[in-house]
Image 1: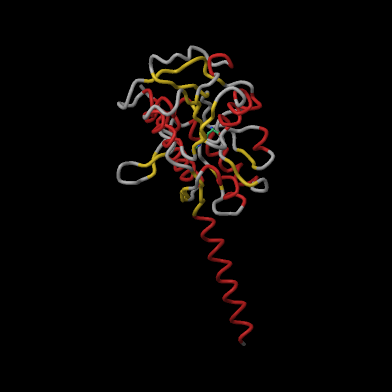
Image 2 (image 1 turned 90 degrees about the vertical axis):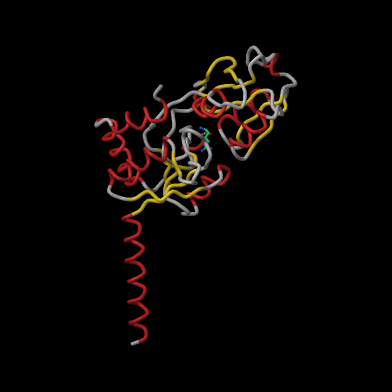
Length: 252
Ligand code: ARG
């Protein structure tokens, strides 16, 4: 008799776990990364990824449960099943494809260099960056690129969050920083804290670093889940939902 009730309990637990999985998808995200993912003054998550992710979940018929996770641990957190997807401005590239399965790209912004107006740095090459202090978010493709290209000539300051990096720029501890263009635009170009400019070219190449746009990442085996997201993405692109969200964050 006891054995029976124990196994029934097991069944009930298994059933409720399956239930939770059906109604909810947990998505890992590193904030703040304005305007992609950040918090409103009253602490609510918002941003392009959040709104788009919620629209995709709605389409699939589930609820997105956002799980905040530092960038450093964002892929390990997926592997450890802390959440089932990552939607965090993560660029699709070959290195990461070895670890995770990506959705189709949902936006494809360049990377850009940002410096205070009146900077001496007039181009981004070894000569003009020599001896400069460059800021990047640790573990991003921007970190990889700057480390490989300028690691020998410049000082690189690596930050665990993008806003710590922006604060150091505002307090003049950095000469220049390198990050996804929309984030530098929102946190530096559009900010009241000082006057900043884009220096040199915006980069989308080489692909080895700059990849193929931002994608939602899944565990390799979760092909069916990735497929659901791809279908939902195509639908919201078709019916105007995507454009509406895009204009909310990037429209004029
Ligand atoms: N797009 C860059 C990369 O994939 C940086 C993304 C950082 N995202 C974030 N939410 N902090 O490496």
